[in-house]
Length: 264
Image (tube, rainbow, N blue to C red):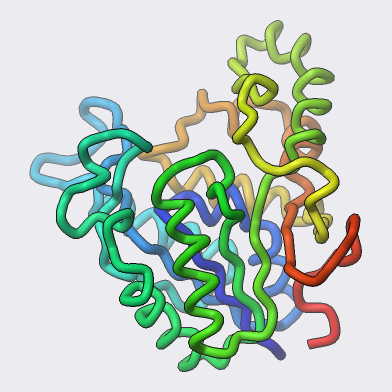
């Protein structure tokens, strides 16, 4: 048995980005640990969703624990930083925001968990955080440094396959329009994910698509039934989210790995 630590910026990121590999690791007998940098204080929430006096971060912490149970994570830790909001927002520079946290300080917090768990595998994000969110970029920086401090041998940078998503969205566009589902425009964003050529690991998680979608649904404050993630048909969901993509330094060129815990 090995230990996988999956490090994320906000509640719900874990379900979208790594829900499949987390549940796969659990089902194969490995220990799964979820670490979240912030409590998602600046997420959007519909009027009337929260109960009187309830703070959004409180609901998001509850949702994270519910999703973690679905995904097989046996330990959930929050590093204690504040959601920085989208890039360019004034919240980026607020005291306590993850974006303003010294990398070394935050890395020491994460490294302590990695050492305690004797983690063999750590997932972080790619150098642009997938789509340029400041907290996601900071996960990359902090995660890589924490792995150095703790001596974690395998570090995988979770990303999105830009080329595959563009192809998939083009195929799904017509049926999505008929169903009234709004698709994000990935093609116009040069900062979205990474191209095929830079990706070194592709993990088939179609067998865990149901767990992944259920974990997304647990984050009801952020992912409503009308959302892109939950409104698409099951087969389309498996096509779009049935593979999780990673970059590992020293691997490649091309896809050379299909299991983050192979041999452990």
